Image (cartoon, rainbow, N blue to C red; front, side, top):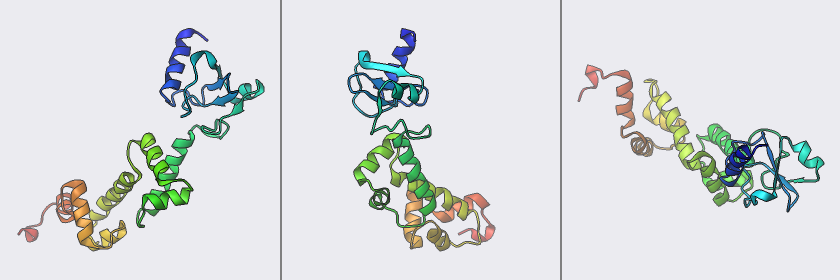
Length: 193
């Protein structure tokens, strides 16, 4: 491997980037542990790294899989990205429920602090921000249907009262649900105040 490519890969290892995950595996000579390049563990010194094109080669040379980044886990997602994907799936499925950070963390058997920190690092938003985005997207779709009342939309996206929903919707969009609906469907002369 030429020095320039090694330097590029080492820079991604030092910055904990997933660019080379699944392409190379990092064998750390001093610990005899093999990691994904994006492993969150302390960055090894450049001279203590051996790069492997696959996990089998590293294991054959006597390295053991890292317990933190789990390079032996199938799939291209590292554990942090897998956690974020699990949270996204839980939010998408249960957005109507009264979800909290603690509830999500309990279901995943991790601490709320770890969930918040890891999810934000992977997605650049918090789990609650993601919940609001999912609810907002669904609310906008439901508001396009004039047959459903504002209260019905509120219940459908997890709010018990139309007033609480209206305050939240306005915070998100700077429009009331009614104004948003009118903007979608055009104002009727009968709707004029």
